[in-house]
Length: 347
Image 1 (cartoon, one colour):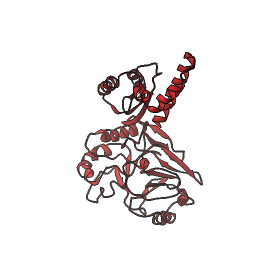
Image 2: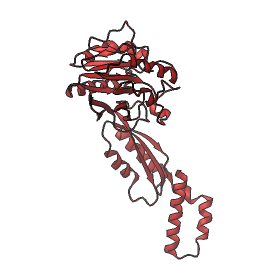
Image 3: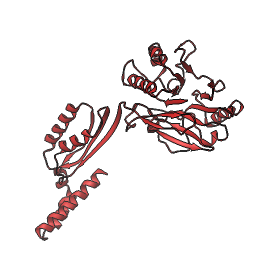
Image 4: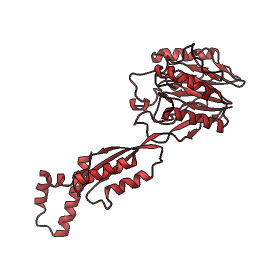
């Protein structure tokens, strides 16, 4: 049995980038001949999005040879009312104690609730009563893994803490895979005994600017290790250009060379720092023209003219002390001091 596992798609509008990403994942599922497509929470960005989008989802989720299993997350916990029919191929997990059965696999799900870590642990322990030893037991989960030091940026635009768990909560429960959601930043696998896995696939499209780098899903054969599968979808990539008066290339040329390395589906967060000997206004204008022409760059421009260093009282005082040295030595020390002042100003 082959499973495609993702989470945190955050659908907002029909045929936007998030919608197109979901369609791309479905195409990957068809190509890879999967049996189950798992969405571990936050299919929708909010309940109101689901009201408009779920009728349009029905055909694209059902016209496939695989089942789609959806777990409610903290953004869409109220989006899957019993009055909404997503199609015969779509299964919504609403109760931990009502697993979805296949010949060799049993899939549990813990829908999101605003509850503390101890309550979550108690709920998880209930699985011991119904987990079958002759099947591969899988749990879908949407919440925080407390064993590792994630930051708030790793979870997207969230407030508060949600469904905290530790790997020890899942030990000896006969669970082979914890297919998780809520962690956006990147693909993460954590092993726990005996030979079991907790997996965050990361968001399949960058939801915030903190989610940089190519996006991934978890695509694996049941009984084998989880497997990161890179996909083509919109994401953010950072470029930082630091200039000094000793830079050999023109700033725009340096930016252009770095931008050419980034795939076209990426949105670029460009930071230009440092100092230039050229006229400040002129170089800022050239950079902005390039950014406008490229069309996929968000610019943070703090480049300054070298005059800001040369007119600093500290530099003037140091420069006075250099008088009396031979000319080549004086120029060498002056350059080193300027470079040092530049580095300090950038920290």
